[in-house]
Length: 143
Image (cartoon, rainbow, N blue to C red):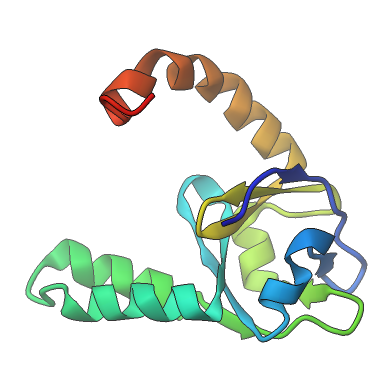
């Protein structure tokens, strides 16, 4: 499970230090792909394979399934962190997420998300009240 908020920086070669607490779990490989709201999703290889199986089972006759799968897989990049725990984020993915130097990496349960730091701050500012207001609707009977 991935938790927390971290503030790494991209270096000049487009590499990002993974949060230290997750490096061991991600050392065997990971997949970076486009996420919603212009962030990047980072999946451990096993989780990406689970998602792949779920999408494989989805009906290809559904236009939304085809469209989502095309973008999701076409933009995916499998990476292996270097010995220092850095991972290279391909230029097209950096451009999609608007990543420059300052980034925010958040834990999002089964994945990490990489955001441009300013974009994350704006998103959080807009969504925190909504989070407070809808928590009962999203998780009825749990919280």
